[in-house]
Length: 341
Image 1 (tube, one colour):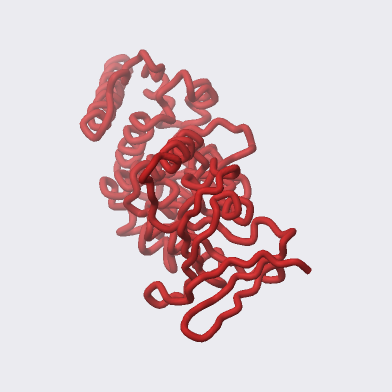
Image 2: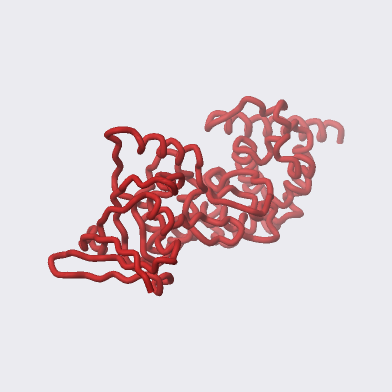
């Protein structure tokens, strides 16, 4: 079978064996793919494709005196029947790829640079890992891009969730947020933006980063982990949001018109969740029934629309102000109920 041959230098990047070489952009594009996170299946790990970012690089790389750092690939084991690395003395090596093969390398760090170069012969440098599995790729991607501008913080959080040895112990707020997204009984089920791509057509209500930061506020204020396991807390938080979705049904099912599931609403409601947990009586189960009864007394009296009570609030100070407003409404209604009682 005819082979495509790419001459390289064999070496190492820290403790990992790599190949360094040069090839036309159109060939590298044809032979590689980005393993984008599919939020519907949980497979993949890359960010969703940004066409504008890629087109900007296409314009740049065709200018005189343009250049780029090496593109980073991996020759995955599962495509090994289509490629072979032939090494020679002195560090020389050749990647031999079946001429008819495509997508034998994953784009570890280059999907936007390469995305719109499928018709260009401009020669680019590259580095290719040999034989990393998907988990090892994801670790390297996270390290390379951990501080990258424009990279979704939620995607990096999702990586942490998949790579952690003890997620519940190390990052309980992320464990709980992922539980809300993954649990079919949760109103947040597959409703969080993880930074990948989705074909489900479902409306994403908030980002994974937003929800986990809100959960962290709840954990800090309530100190619930001093007495309860992370798994129990995850169920409690799920019950709370299930109650919210039931009591505030219209705001929940129409997230574009209401602030309930946007950052300011999520942060404020998790602050209120801590209030409700702290004021429970001994022996009272903090389940969906408990939260629904409490929320019914005040939550429906708040204007959750984008032009309502919480309009214009944002950031940490805005979250505090939103929570303070909700508490004030609750106190007023409580005093009124006592007076009328």
